[in-house]
Image (cartoon, rainbow, N blue to C red; front, side, top):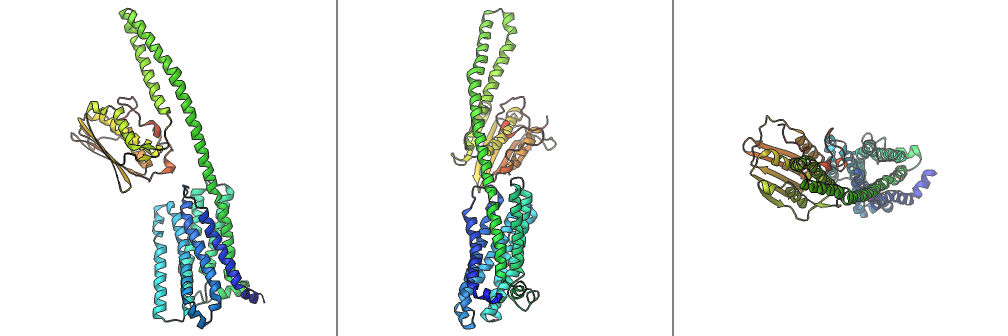
Amino acid sequence: MIRDLFMAQEPALRFFAGLVYYTLGLSLLLQSRGHSRLRLARSLPWLAGFGILHAVYEWSGAFLLPLRSPIAAEAGSILMVGRIMALALAFLCLFEFGADIVAPLGPRWGWLRPIGLVLFLAWGAGAFALGLLAALPLLEWERWVEAGARYFLGLPGGMLAAYALRRHTFHLLIPLARPHIVGMLRTTGLAIAAYSLLAGLVGPPVPISPLNSINEEAVQNLAGVPVFLLRSLAGIVLVAGMLRALEIFEIELSSRLSSLEEAQILASERERMSRELHDRTLQMIYGAGLLIRNVQAQAEPATASALNPVVRLLDQAVQSLREILQELQVRPAMASLIDGLERLIREYGLSALMDVETDWQIPSDAQLPPAQLRHILAIVSEALSNVVRHARARRVRIAAALQDGQLRIQIADDGRGFGPEAQPGFGLRNMEERAYLLNGRLEIQSQPGVGTTVILEVPWSGIRREALHRPLVSGQSQPEEGHRRAPGHPEADPRVTQ
């Protein structure tokens, strides 16, 4: 009696099942988070594609119900083939969703990316061969092909997605998410696992083990309800869990807004401190220096000579305050790389010490985020400092080029160089650490008597954002401290141990 009732209402029930998956796909598309830095946000379109394609499969099944007779089925053959293709593509999207979010967990997972497409192509080739060579009736061909899609695409795709979501949640999202969001993501993973079992293992009956005993008819006789309704229940849990878990993006956005507000407050405070230091402290020290110089002009030679150290200390204090004022200046949201490089050349006075050649093969208005630019300029500053203090060079060439998404900066001098026996010092380790934070590569080529070439290659948009503001290795300066050292600064370090 109950089975007959379900059979009579099957079109409406399949429409409801399709609506569940369509809600999942549409909700994820509308909740697109292109601005998010979370890996999960970039993987959600795959899950949205799964939902929409699965909805197409369920809805087309409702349209095909009146065409189940052998004669009428021929008229709906195109729709039937399209329905099976939609199911296979839905499983492919689910597989790619799992492969995409598990990728950050380590290089050993990279091989999963092409596996989904390989399985899909193998299934398509098998379906084509089965229809061409076996010459099966359409309804029987449909059962075999659908069973193959479920077993070879749906089951591995669903299990991978469930496992990947769990691993992603516990390895990457727990530091950001609240406990209830973590719990919802765990529930979502379990719902995907349940769906993969119901969709992968339980398919149409075909004379092959285990599908000859574990199939839709057997499960329906055991449970008393159609299998697609059980899958829909898993889909409902999946929809509810994902929509609830999307709150993590609101938390991320709120955190970023709070960071921006803190940055604005800090910028205002830095500006206030700059004004105070410039208008009061700096002027008072400068005025004290003028008074002492006036006293020197009127005093005896011995007294005037005794005051020279005081004058030098005051001059150093003025210079130090001016450097602090430069550090306290509010940095723009984006900054020009060429402007930064040319500023370094001016600050080190290279043109007065040696011949300087520059070669800028990047757009003059190319802008970089301040954090990325600080690291790049700090590396260049360290290299130029070594040229000025140790290289004894007559000529230096500074080049920057942008090719195939890679920024390449090269500083080459004709100085004394050094051999492979030289041990790297603090400055070189600092440069290497900054290059690592930029996800780049630092190479230093040098020969005694020939000169030294420093090569930095950085992905133009491949910065490791999560690492930009973390401290360097123990004992090293912070990123914003290293790129304003003037020649002869007591804290500047050579590239090698002297």
